[in-house]
Amino acid sequence: MKQSLRWLYIPWLLCAAYIFGFSYPAAMDLPNHLARAFVLDSCMSGSQSTMCQNFLAEFRPISYFFADYSIILLLKIFPNPFWAGKIALFLVLSLNLVGWYVLFRKVRGEMNAAYVAGLLLLFNNFFYKGFYAYLLGNGAFLFWLAYWWPRRNEHSLRSSAGLSVGLFALFLCHLGAFFSALICYGAYAVWRFVDNAEGNRWQVIRSYARDWLFALTFLGIYGFQQYATGATLLGHTGMQGLEAGSASLRWWMLKLVRFTYVTFNHHKYFDTLIFALVVLVVASAVRRHTLANRAKSFLLFCSLVFAVAYLVTPDISHGGSDVDLRFLLPGYFVMFLGFGALIEDSKSTRSLVISLVTLQFAFNFYYQFPVQSELGALDRAMQKIPAGQRLVEINSRANMPTGTLSRVNPLSHYGTYYMLKGGVLVNGMLNCYMNPNIPYFCYRNPEDSTSTFKNQFEGLPALSKEEIEELRSRFDYILLIEPSEPLVEMRLPENEFARIYRDGDVYVLKPIRSGTT
Image (cartoon, rainbow, N blue to C red; front, side, top):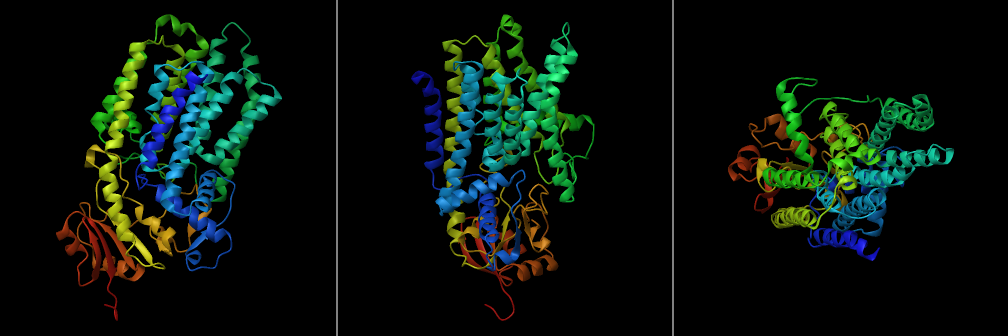
């Protein structure tokens, strides 16, 4: 057992070094989560502050709220938002790591190369985007799968009750985790039905009917939640840059390319190559005779079902982006789990996979240094903004550190940290107007919820007089990220916006109004 634990605590220590070894947590949406949790905590307690006059906040026991509530608890323990953010990232990493370890032990009983391959998924694109609720849900899903796997053929009232409690917990964490569990359970029911060709298939249907009744109950709860908030199940759907529902060759080619997006972080060619090599090495260790194990072969079938779910799901749905990719992360975990259950492990296979995963970790660690420099400049700039102001962040920088070769942008949403530093409003925080899944948090003025000025400079013409006037009238300060100094002067002229502070590409501007200097 002690020898087995090294497979857990060594990667756990590496995760701790990665999170706590740097000053600023580099995850795009994490400041948004922290700021929203801070506002929720303050305003639900009945505060009549100026900040709470700008927001509507109420408690609702629905999906996504659990993630925000967990951050509320973290902020009470760690008032420093950077430390709270680090702890939040470390917790979701730990949850996914321990969940993967427990699940692999339940299925295989011993660690092998496929377990190490699964560690490659910890630093995924959702981690760098700071999708805290989704990562929390994915870790909970891994624990649910570890609970369900040894009980998958049980259909007693006790097992059905345990399944329902687990589904409810997943529902509160994230809808992606909830639907991932339904995919696994439904795929196994189909697998048993087809595999029982000479048996009583009606008995298979009856044995799963009661469990599905529980699942459908939660689907009904979700549907009622959407109806109550005036939303639809899919909302606006489509593929970025393409027409919604298009079945063109280009649409499908983009879908196929996006299969690697979950593991594509800092450099698409390097990240994709490492992932492809790891999959190839682990898959090559599967032997034909091991596929005869029907129970464990199911896991590979289940990973294919996740792939189908990805293919039929739109990229943009219900106020969220990369919705289809949410099925790939659990699908890849299940795929490596299936490989792990079937491979004949060898020292050479294990060593090669360990080397590739270590190389990828070192690559991620290396790119923290330029990101930290950028975030440090932003933090120093925000310290120049006094408390009690209305702030808008305008970010025209491409993803870090290599533009189109990267899917990481830790600079976007960084300005929402200002809510924890005494701000009364920051433009564009994720709220009910932008995503109907969070009806418990809204701006009182819907215009404040928009991200009109995000990425304003990227290939866009100069701001119109109306837009300049809107900036001057609605906001007290502008946190600007723009690498081109001529563009700053052309779009935000100095006679309209005073330069309060500059640190490289980062500016703090203050609109000049009548009677002020």
